Length: 514
Image (cartoon, rainbow, N blue to C red; front, top):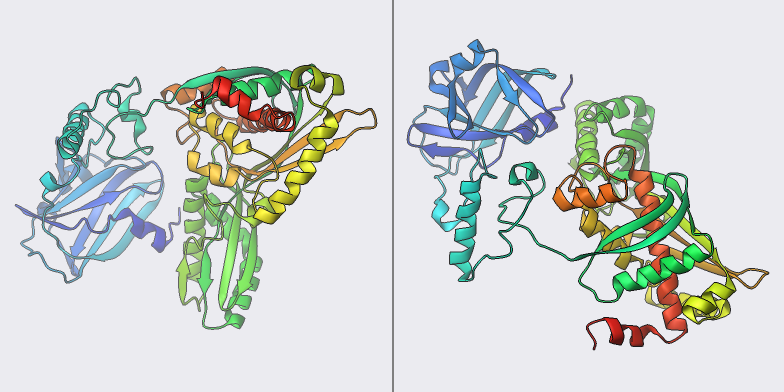
């Protein structure tokens, strides 16, 4: 299995070359995929191979194995994100000068691997001055208590609620660093909401985590209204996750010719990208030329994961192959800010990031009058006036508050809440029907959600997903349809409150204003 040199060097943890009592040590972290370290062939220091009897490998606090013992045993597991420490019995002094470290080994499923990096020998960190951590077991009870004590002594305050949790810290690897406890956010439920989706079909009671008074009640009221008129029709219309590297050339012609070459080699680039994951599928690459820069926007399907890390790894591998096979690139950055990760942008509204999903409903006039005390034409007129306000302000959302419901559901279900920055974009539309009823529709062009991976598998988050049958594989489109339907319920509820002047009085009755 080919591993580009730029990706292979990421195994080495830069800044980890440290002087020890018996020599020097450095850290390797598996940033590729679960593997088995089959055989350590050699390690070199400044071009000279280190004698094998002066090499040992530490994979945990109580596991230190020699070069020979490792090879005699047929290797050792080297799982994704695992850190191993390599100890060399070499008498080297602390110095700012760069030293060359080379390593050659074989690993399954990659085969023989070899790379060389540069680093300088540093002094051991005085960890009494820093947050306590354990390189090999940073989620054990002992180190967690040390960090809690450190935090208390540093701040002069006491940890009471934060340190009480039901989650298994050992399962949080890859989700949090320097773990000391949890933040507890109240969860309420709204619904049921009737949804006629291609993936979500039926009645759903939705968990919402928030500290904002009236929010759950408002969404619940909108759901009641929608149900009276038959519920919500929801449709996922597009799916894409991006990483956008930039390649820099000596002039504009170089950038233009490079894009031509990329298009000619798309099959091989796709092969290299998809080799990093059994899930990520590279669908197409957009290109945008400016000055002497070639911006490439890699677009992927990522299954039930949100996929930002997945596509980052895949794109990095693909770019490694590109750099190894195309001459003339003067500089390269894996992210050019053109994927607009965790930032609202016009390109994501136009081109989709995450799931593009629409929720729509036709609400009967009598139901609006009965539940909301408002005429359809009042809401429609306010929507047109608010559209002018949206245009003048330059906002990325022509609706009222869809991020409220999206954020509450994100917190409850373990989504990456920072993705609300992109998922906040929405296109709201309404019209009066010939019968005098109100058609309403919301399109969320960049809803970034997951039902597998990330924070979705943790404690309460997994439980909340399971309560709406959205945890695990082949559930992400269902979840996207539910989120969009909930957002529509919130829009019609607030639009009715504003149009009927109930907005402030509701907060006075139910919220923190009283």
